[in-house]
Image 1 (tube, rainbow, N blue to C red):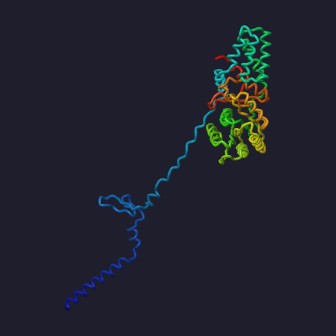
Image 2 (image 1 turned 45 degrees about the vertical axis):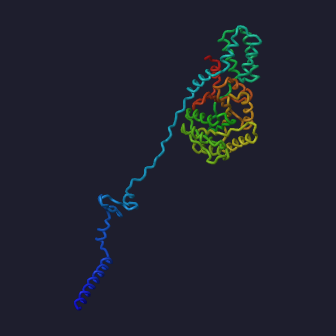
Image 3 (image 1 turned 90 degrees about the vertical axis):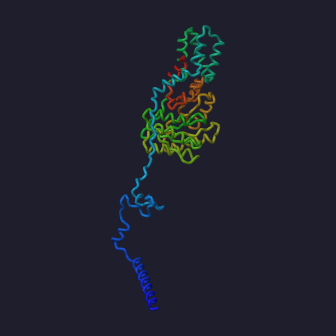
Length: 398
């Protein structure tokens, strides 16, 4: 029995010593050297990252947490800078005139065909003169201009008695040039002392005003002008975007509003103000299309001009007309001229009409010159109007 008690005592002593020893080990304080060994400040390429272990095949298993060492040394993301749009070089004005004349020659105009054929007949009686008169009226020459031209031609043909086609053509050319009036000043007022010249572009819906402004910007850039565009058509959703695209193609900035339906007068003013700040040569202001019989819209157009004039004088008011509208274009021109004092006409779509006489009719009734013509849909299909070149194209046979 004493032996059993002794054995029990020894076992208890051994167990007690183990427990005490374990507590001492668990509660010890690690020395700096020991800490460094367990948690090295740096790791070799072969060291496992913190929180990692190796599986039975030696592959590294990493815990689902970010590796700060790798995150700190990762290459920063490269910012993708959008490429600058390629800036186009507009076609020179001299080249445009030759190309536009060629297109007009090919168009279905009555002057180079029907009229010359009638005037070159062996016998020109009253019936022929009536037919000549009807042909001119069809070409939208206007009643007064038609009667004046027929009377003059009838007198000259009778006096000279010539039926030679070339001589008849020369007479018709001379009289048409007189009607169109080469003495009118057709230059664009884009020169102003110590400030940007301001050009306001107006017209009814659907005549291509915004496109015309974009094409006019190309004309001015081709003349080495520094241009700014003002998108004061705030009612058509795509107008500002369309104008901005036109400007970007030739490196011209556009001032617009981010708010659809914003006050167009305010946008126009801001465009002129920005052009003044940047010391630009010209600011082109596009306006919303409006019907000439809507008094409130015409009043608004007048307001746009008055607000601009608080900042700068308006040097040019261009009315864009569609040549295919014929005599209706005259009614439009009258109302717009009363509202904003139109100083020049831009006549578009002349290539698709036999109504070249509208040039004469508009100028005769308004005393406002046609300054620009458009003969196509290309970006450079707009050119300054030249009286003699226009008449020669009308009379030139294909």
